[in-house]
Length: 368
Ligand code: FAD
Ligand code: UDP
Image (cartoon, rainbow, N blue to C red):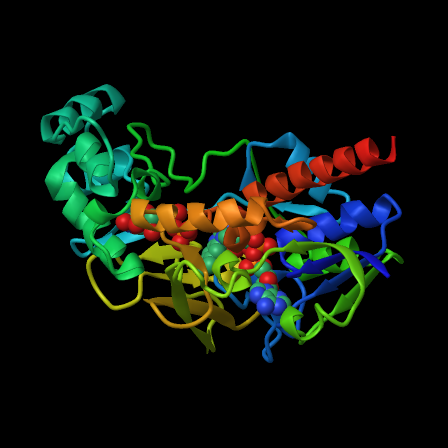
């Protein structure tokens, strides 16, 4: 008899497996894939280059708790991600910053002057509800078209006006020359990769890992007291309120017989090509190798569910599933797919740590 059957070996499931095992619980964690680490899975390809199977994963957080927790399982390599955009035949920093404006408009403005420049372009929106409003409100139509509209349509197959404000708000405009993609206080990559970090998390003697297993094939056979589910919530409930939409991505990898390909980790293509961005892994991992591997991201509707799509009608459907989930005894839902939230890795870790504390509190209350 297992205390917990956990579905999904990504961050959401693995954090709970590790924490609960340490409390003496017996855990079976299963994944339908042939590897652990969920979408953060990395491995050495046949040329010996460390790549991320499900697209570039860069760790960043403002949570010291999350960073401290993961540091039990990995050392870190300091890394601050930088992104350039191919716009008007030039490569310019994304998010839009002082340098972006000066390069695009052939100017030499300082930070104060760029504030005025953007204010003269901005189309004020009140209230700011959609992903279009967020951008127009700060930079106006011209920069919106150059940086956001095309990229967003490729990525989501929706116009920014059809998406919640939170989507493009992930990439805020800056009036200084900071060209880092993220401004979080803690930014680093696991020194030997994500998969090794997950191996350490799951190495506890109370944890049994079962791969290549759809939980539906074993859930009625293997005795367990409670279940933690980190797959798509609509699938758990057999799509009874309809399918929740997700975006997927086709990753096209290329290994090139040259040491470097591009000058920065990622280059975005907001207005050209069918792919959204190209990432060169060696920038992220710091690996030295005479060859290099890059990945193109082609967004698609079919395939593995990677991105929940933040918009009201989807949230309404999710809320129906959530109500059902809350009424389902001995089953907990967490993670990006389990709670239909566009979460980064650190947010998923924080969510699962919070769920762990809740579970233990409830168990202690029952025992008293
Ligand atoms: P997942 O990692 O998706 O794990 C869920 C697991 O459940 C999967 O392994 C799946 O196989 C398994 N599963 C599902 N159904 C079943 C079933 N029926 N039976 C058994 N197993 C099942 N975050 C960042 O912080 N920084 C980044 O740079 C970043 N880049 C990203 C780039 C891309 C292209 C994508 C798609 C995501 C990125 N993320 C990034 C987000 C990050 O991947 C997620 O926050 C995190 O991996 C979510 O962890 P999870 O455990 O919730 O889900
Ligand atoms: N975005 C954009 N142009 C860019 C970068 C981002 O329009 O050059 C928008 C787009 O809608 C994207 C969202 O901002 O989906 C979030 O970008 P982020 O880089 O955070 O996406 P992720 O890394 O999660 O795919």
